[in-house]
Image (tube, rainbow, N blue to C red):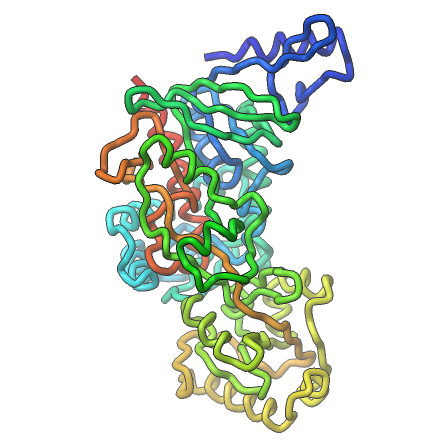
Length: 487
């Protein structure tokens, strides 16, 4: 289906009133018609309409477009990318071509076991099976689109190095958005920014499109054969968070402002079921003053966590919920992430933290201790003990299994950290085809969902690096399923 109305209307408006151009070259590209100088928003039609332009939405758009369908993405924020833009640590996959080149032995079966264990077996097994078995293919697909995923590290809860990221450990999320957006543009996918979906339309349990409003609060309808919900979670919606977990009252969030659960609410209105809504994850390493998230890869590359006494108190690469609880039990409910020059050199993402002034630095341990008002002898002893564990390969204090390097290279750095709401594991109920289900497991025809808006993949706790592979794997599945299930 070709959206000729949009093209002709944009040309008409351009010819009559230059100042009325609304997106013939990008941005908010709603259709308009003009009569005696009055601009009227008109309805649109397409094959597939996608709500949300993060990694899941873009992946779905690319697959549907490659299947020969016309695609429109609506994005309520001014920028494309959603929470994917904020992802830094890596994208998990096991048994990949990149791992093979680096001599890393791993498998989808081990990834499955780690994911189920990390989620306390609350996860829906069939979704995890699809997720882990398709993740390696997602890496190759991204590389074919132009992504650099040549660096592989380890994040909390994983038994192997499987978190793929750009060369030097650079932040992965913004890079993936850039690659996916360019691929969508090459396929002439229409992206309407500052355009908010307000309702999913359905008749007789079949979805027929969506209602949206543009940045001028003008309402119009986009009819479609399939609707894909890829709006992310509700980590920035304080009311919704505390509805499901009252203990999160007053917590900060790492989420971008658009993560307010809109997709969940709209899908519920047409009968969608929910799963695991009370499963909400905090990220343990967030800067308390500004909510800036410090990637888990810093710990994965060798950093330790100390309290105000200068002592370790937790296995730093435990799952996020365990580390968060341990930090909250410390004086001030914050702690310090400590690393040295060798860790900084191993991960280019750290340069951003230094440049933003988030670090406290010392040329020696004593100098660092003075800056933190910590007993220098205690801090020195802590580092000596930890470095001894690195040498022997056994952490007899906290059983940390992966200790890639000792901390003894000047300079030394710390970043004050504390937990903040990071990921909502619960959401819309889906099947392995990314079809949205009712509470009674009936398929809602024409409605699909992928990414953090869904529930069941991560269970009671998400492993670092699993979110990006989730959005790509199920984003691609949503795009292909939407096409395959069209009548």
